[in-house]
Amino acid sequence: MNRFPLTGFSLTELLTTLAIVAILAVITVPSFSGLVAKSRRSDAMAALLQVQLAQARWHALNLRYARALDALGWTSDNSPDGHYRLRIIAADRRGFKASARPVGSQQSDRCGAFAVDELGPTYGQGFADAHCWRR
Image 1 (cartoon, one colour):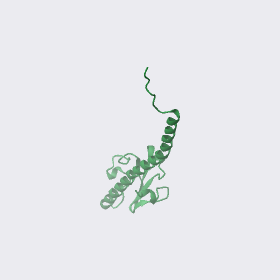
Image 2 (cartoon, one colour; image 1 turned 135 degrees about the horizontal axis):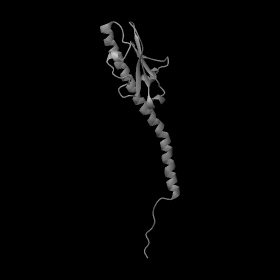
Image 3 (cartoon, helix red, strand yellow; image 1 turned 180 degrees about the vertical axis):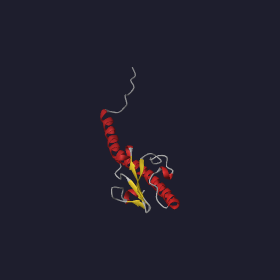
Image 4 (cartoon, helix red, strand yellow; image 1 turned 90 degrees about the vertical axis):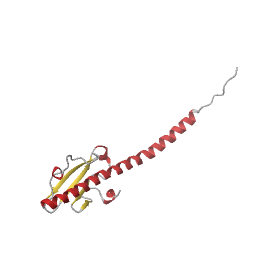
């Protein structure tokens, strides 16, 4: 009788491989999640800069800033990719402030809400700092 030699992995080799894969997963998953959250921040930044431009156009025609997004032509209060909810906090003849608050899975992002006024990004005061605005 001719027997074929049995080849394969031992239980120790299999467990060692699984341990290495688990360690790599623990290291890479949080890093990947942070990169995804960072890339989604550009959704808020782009939306707020669009609001700022729309407000500048509105102010040129009406000598005051719009108090609602629909006056600026926004049909929804969501950012283009839907990761942030937009809102005009205050508006008068002299200025405005608009915010983008994270929704869904983006709520766990450490930067939180972004804001912009007639001069550009607003840092602090409960809004994202300058580090978060850097891409």
